[in-house]
Length: 455
Image (cartoon, rainbow, N blue to C red; front, side, top):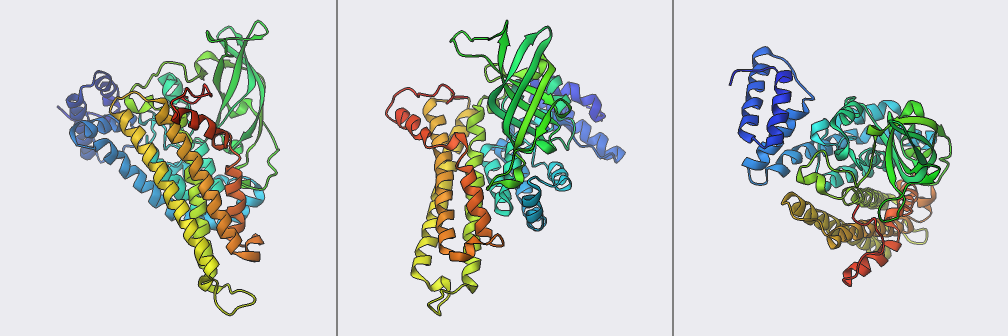
């Protein structure tokens, strides 16, 4: 096949993808590479080329799908470590401003931290859930608010269900940050061609940095909520540009201060129907990975952030123990038996919770990629492991905070921030103790008592 320009190959590559013609796709890729080498041109962002090569490696090399995305995850983890000194230097500013700095956010975006779960077809990294867990953990070891905003910007609830034209329009900007709310506190009134949207949403993390918002609404028609065949209200995720939204400063809190999770208001804005979607819409991207229920991919991130915070608390306590001594004893804290016991407990809590989380997530991911149907017990196990990770992390931080004594009270001590941040995560609705009742029912072989468990 002769050398072809990348723009000439894109359509042919997509056609090859759609019919599953791996060999043609590889030939097209090779012809593009020849053109790039011959011309000295630097080409980035051709999502179709990236996607066909992912499928090629997955098809031709055992475990290839994991290998390709593993390289991206490794690069991001290394990048997170490289960002760490800069993040630590910005921690006080982040806390005082109650938001992330724009320049740091832009650089994180360009490094790919806000495209972890974005489909490769739209320029994303399409990481596996476990790979993303490692990235969120590493970011949280430096600053929980940054990790939280990165996690929140990757909540692609229905991106695989959007039309390709809409998705490409939204995600074409590499600096794009996506904020969202899954609280159904908006009203989307049916009008010709789309919806008239009104509402106010709380806890919209990173809203001051966002180009677009995903806002959950209840559909109204003829002055009443429209019902699904089951009798439940009909919900839609509405995509609104930042220019249609007003931010109300409400985020004066104890933990995760730097997330800027203010309220967002939309008043009487028209949104075309193509910018609305929900879990029940048919998939546009139909590869097995997009069959994974969104919550099963997203909620483990909470556990990852909490575990990253806990790891930072353990490290902080170990560092503190070198200098700190008991007031009534001459021995260093590291020689104190109670301190030794608590440190060992914290280590066991974090490591065991991480293993449970990664094991359940990996098992589900492997089944999805193999084309097997996702089951309620599988998803419930992932949700349970996420709750357990957050709870165990909070317990570990509490142990370190207690062991630090009065030093832990000072804002100059990393344990003080870790204590506030990890307990803020425990308040998230998806990791509340109420989940244990649902998990227990499923473990007994009963039907779940929450209809959203498979979303």
